[in-house]
Length: 171
Image (cartoon, rainbow, N blue to C red):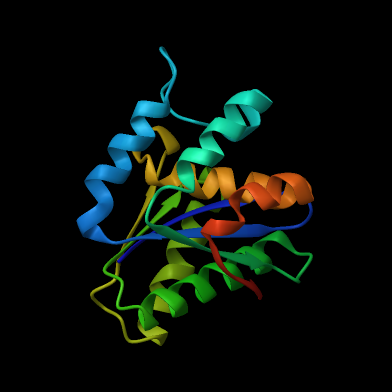
């Protein structure tokens, strides 16, 4: 399994981790790339119109992916982010995941790498590789972006991605 992580900072920190089976990855990336409009490098939910968001949500619900939401309780953004990433690694370790890709947040990159290094060691999963990438470099991140946006927006939008959400965890 491969995990793709993005976050929302709208109402505190919320992290979404999308898990994709490697056998489905090429088809998932192709479907996501097909959703881009001419000239778009990526799909970014905050910049899409509501009609595009509805269409994207409908297509996402046809994909064979699962998303776990991690809601951070701590108000300190650094502590919250570290707790969420450690929980992601714990869940991916339990699922025998091999790769984790996180949307790169430049101010947090060094702290993210330290958290991930520690979590991979703590959970005994040395084969779990991790990488911080820009959103235009990895379409899998767009799913987590969309789900995080919808989850924090309101009940109507949350309902549109509910079929994708496997679990919601407080960390």
